[in-house]
Image (cartoon, rainbow, N blue to C red):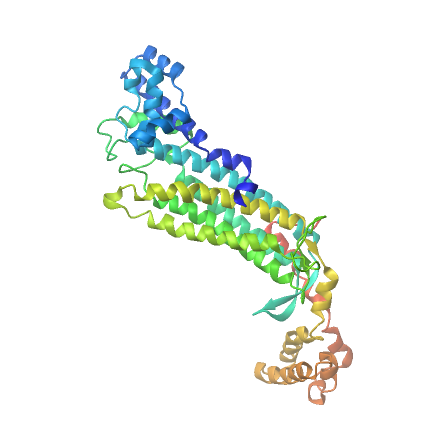
Length: 434
């Protein structure tokens, strides 16, 4: 499923070919820096740059013998570069090239995910403005509470995605580092100038301190940021799935021509997109655990993290990219049923106005306990009757009606009351009603 729907940009970023391209770029940039400090001549550098190229097929042939991907890469290049190839990888260890490349690729991925977040926020924004005043019942504990609007629900999602975007921006800065500092990170055989030059050219920051590797708390933070995106999307999708239930049916996923919901029951229109989002977000959370486990290593450096990262890093980036685009499609094609929302809103026969009556009694001088007891008595009678309307029950209560005129009580049963601050909330979120 993921392979089928993977978007070309993220797939290309994590391809073997792109990774090898950046490996070569790192090695050439390191040679340019070494040329500046006099290790090799300009002629040597130009010969290497002219001849250096790689073949994935040849690299794989060599790796079958060496069982070392970096050596396979360097050997395949050296075969084409002649004696000048002796300067390749000078003073470097494998992780100098690998982690610098990884930082570059993760930063590319983060940039793409940030674009996705902006698109998701725009889709939510449009739907929120469209349903700014679309009344629906607010539910707490799954039970009808008070009226709200579908637009406010979406406005909340908009702000949450804004926070996810901020997390990704911060994570991009954390993982956007490289290191060219040698076998244990002490620059014994490579100048700090080389690292500074390579990182500057790649748009990375040099890691302030490193061992043989860039420390993996950075990578774990990036995976965490992606996991937060996925978990938010699951939260949104789970709500939409719940609202699509037959008994509620306030929204519905778009259903395309020719689509089928069930192999057995032709009437079914299932929330499969939301279910996919919910299921796949679990994979991100599982990968986060692996990313956290990769932080503690023997003497801050072994390669137990490496094999796991070859799976979880591209996996998380592809998954997050897929989830964001899937959610965008879900929101853009979402069918909203305001009439069903209104019908559900009235299902409790006016009980959703109970707090307004409670507060009005308090304003009239009753203690909160006195007012609560008086109102709750009528709410329970309404619930238990199954047919009576709350307003009628209140009007028939002589003890309560000594505090109200009929018209005064009826005015409390007004949906407009719940819309009075919607504009204020939208302004807080940066959303404005068109």
